Image (cartoon, rainbow, N blue to C red):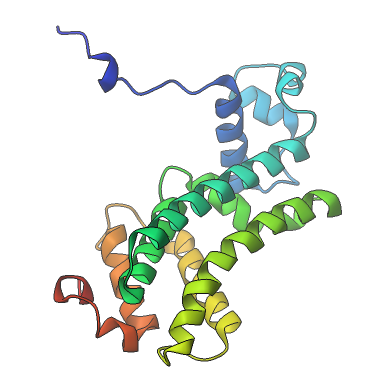
Length: 208
């Protein structure tokens, strides 16, 4: 049998990445407080001492999971924002990227980010919330433009909270392979949340 070309092979996760993935899965399933370092180590076939070679504490694991998740979704949504000149297409592209980041391979980590930040110490929480605020600023800029054009309510902060709340809640009910793929879900949610802008979309994007 022909050996796969190097470009066809999926890069192996580093040990650090394996630890983060295992911890995110357990934190999502059991909650941060109810998950022990020993359980994380056992899931990887390693000792607790070996895990501490990579991370100083369980909280350090949680912080890195959250920081990496926020940086990844920020990069992706920022690329979408910068790629579209027209406001309706831009916001739709941003919604699509947010959903793809949330519901894709990082689902465990993103769910932990959404629901476990209260488990952080005040200092760690401040670091994570600073990244979250920077991410939300990406949305505020485009939503403010929409408000200035009379396309959405003037209370931009409330619109942003409503939008991100609706997008993030999909992590609780979305099923891959179900009746809606991520692109269709983004389009349908855009039409529901921003009907005045939806009429300006190209027909191919307006209704899935």
